[in-house]
Length: 420
Image 1 (cartoon, rainbow, N blue to C red):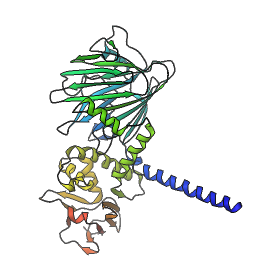
Image 2: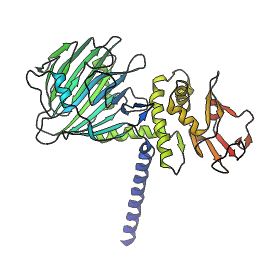
Image 3: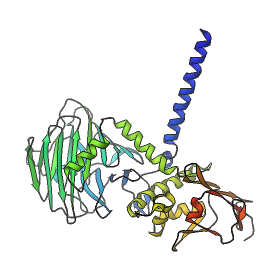
């Protein structure tokens, strides 16, 4: 009996250790990403995104003279640009009968008193006590709201304020737990669908609001809505998807990517997706600031690269190609990454990378299944200048490598000395 107990204990310990290792893998590199940092002297507004997703969340407005709104939803349009269409704000109050809805939204806006973010997740607590969390799939945004006692449990929807002109906006209450609509701008129409975990009542309008029953539609050049979740629960979940094709296509996204109501699963899946992409380039450093700088730059570069990605060329899908495309577009985080790893992209008919002195001492670029290109630096002192460069133990004559040479894998050694 004692032997059996020892075996059970050992198996339990192994399972626990494996579980801990799996959790470490999930949070390994995303923990070094600061999604709310300032980039290029501008506040980075993307609070949550997936590496190749078609929806993003912004935590503040990029437009001037607009209604400030906590959650701005962005989608990729037909020209591969990011367009801001939907703005939502959880509120604990109800507009008066004749109150202008834009005045109501402005009066209820407030800066978060506490916020945190990961690459595909955002969390904020506001002055009114409302907690909001958002996670993403490739084509859907998953909201979670928790309301404090003694207040309304509600949400505002703004289909008017955006960085381009609204020609027409439409919202329809399909059922007690679903709404859909569209917003037409100068170049295209965006369609959306929302599903709720709780029965709702809804009012919509362009100034003061009118109650919508199931099947009712409001249509206008300006369109706002106030959504009431009632009093049955203080915890609300909301699924949202957009499409440039139709409401049916947006609903298909939800049916394909959000067949459940587990917010934690979506959050964990998003973290795993980012960790997979970030791990294509691994660095070793005892300096946490170096780690944070590098992986925040890599995250920011992915956001830029996914907008300029060229299809039809297989090499463009590797991280190195995405970074190179972004570099040639003037992306500073991409330039900082190449400076850190000692490779300087050069424009030519094929991608070439000239050698510079790396800031980091050990870099590993995954170039295929179980295949890596490693960059290693041996320094004689902190003031090393001159360098010999060896590729797989042999001197590199031209002090540069092509993309294809890097993708074959291998070891690149920088031997630094104190001579200029």
